[in-house]
Image 1 (cartoon, rainbow, N blue to C red):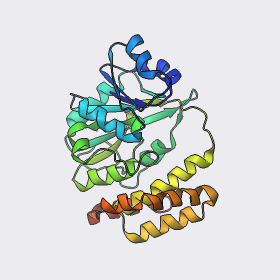
Image 2: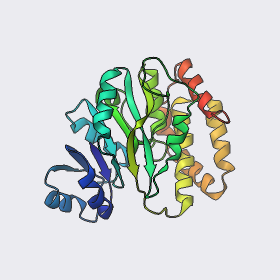
Image 3: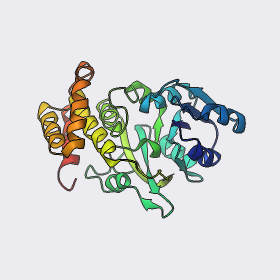
Image 4: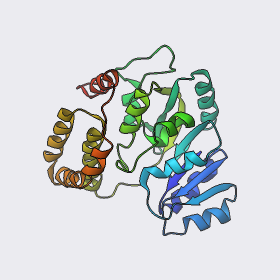
Length: 274
C-alpha cells in the first residue's frame, strides 16, 4: 500500500488505521508535522519525505520502494474495504495481462458510487476474454491496484500531468505496451474527500492537464479540440490553458503517437454517451 499526502494530518489519522500493512507513506513536503506525527503514532508505517510537493509522482517513489508484486494506492482521505486487497491480488494472479485493477469507489458517508466508477462500469470497450471486467483507459489512483512491474515499466505518473487527469497518459501507455486495465466491481475502496475549495482552481487544473495529456500522446486535432474547450470554459478554462502553454515545451519533449488501436479505443470513450 502506498499512501501520498500533503498537509492533511487530520485525514491521515482517520485513514491510516484502516489500511492493511505494509504501508508506505510518501509525504509531499507537508508543513503540518505529518511525518513526525506518523513516525511517532504509527511506527509500523514506513515514512519517506519527498521534501517538496511532487504531486502524483510521489506515488512513483512509493511504488519503487515497495517490495510487493502489486501496489495499491490511497490518498489521505481514502481507504480500501475489508478484504478488498486480498480479492484484488487473487484477480491479478488469475489475469497476468492485467496491469491496473480499477475498484468500485464509494464516496462519503452515504457511499454513493464515484462518477469515474460509474463510467468504467459501463465502459463501451467491453470485456476482453483475458480480463476480469470492462476494459478502461482511465482510473482514479485512490481506487487502483497496479502490477508494479508494468506500472514502473510504463514510467508511472509523470511530472507534466501533476494532478487531476494524471491517469490518462499512464493508461494509454500501458495499453500501448499490451497491458490490460479493467474495472472490477467486487473490489471496493472508500473515498471521503474534504469539502472542495474554490471550484475554479480544480477547473483550471483539469483544463491544463487535458490539453497537456493530449499534447503528450494524442493527434493534433485532439489538442486543438481540448484547447478550444478550455477557451470556452470561462476564466478558469482560460487560466488552465495559459498554464498549459507555459509547460508546453516539456510536454512536446515527451510527445509520441499511440498505436492506432489504442487511439481508436480512446476516441470511442470520448464519443457522446461513451
